[in-house]
Length: 152
Image (cartoon, rainbow, N blue to C red; front, side, top):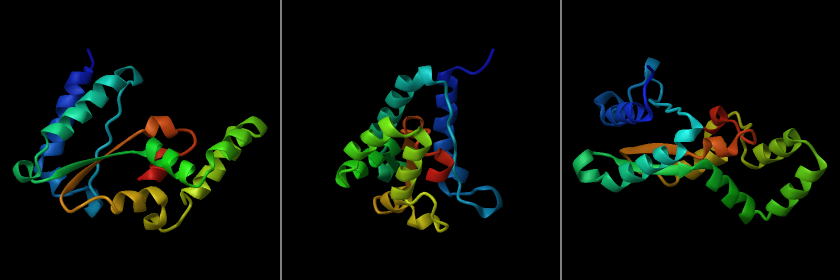
């Protein structure tokens, strides 16, 4: 029998608290990261877990601060700020999803060679302090408009 979502969440909890993860030790001196994938039917359990994780996190005790960023909400905030939601709605009726996705990716600067110029990267870097564990959510919500591999 495969792992249950509770087993997977327990492994995630151990990973976040591990010294290698907290010291940002990745393969080949890359930035350490952990991808937690799960069955969409478990979405509400995962959301509750992340909420509880944040509530329990005490920087002075744990040595790190948990910061959660929902990429879908960040994208929608930008689209609202730029007054693009109505335009995108019109595009959706007139064009295919790839046309819409291309325009959104341009706005988010997802095709920049320098990752630090991408909108999501700048947004997160401006809001993260030293010794933070960053959790990205909303990845399933932005697909196929933005692919996650481009977001991180």
